[in-house]
Image (cartoon, rainbow, N blue to C red; front, side, top):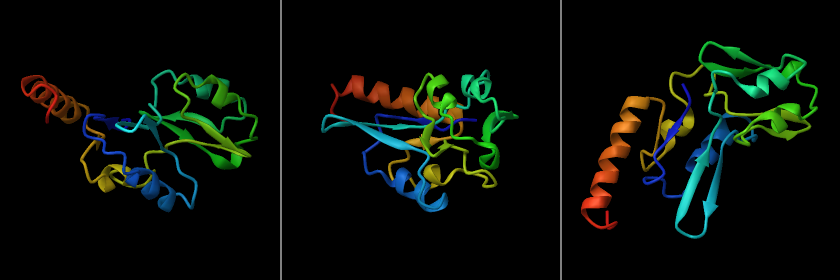
Length: 145
């Protein structure tokens, strides 16, 4: 159950970053990457089925817990192998590793609730439908939507 991003809706406000940092005591688990002055892409953990970060983590700090890739901070040695193993570059290290935990214990991640542009979702079907609708509108109106 990763966070799905509709990049056509993202306005680059970084509300998701701020909300994430607030919930996680100043350590954000999402980053918004800006591409020039028009495009922005929030980067989240994909919670891969076969997560290479968990395979690289010899201490067991990163592990699969159902559909999500979980993190046990007390087991982390800070070696950084998980960061090197992640093909998406979404594991960060700052003495210890940190990554999106889908706001463990909450029904919906804070970033999804906070996004003013409704660009984030944990519902794949809804996110796909919105993206297809948006793409059709952009095509119909020549990119002026």
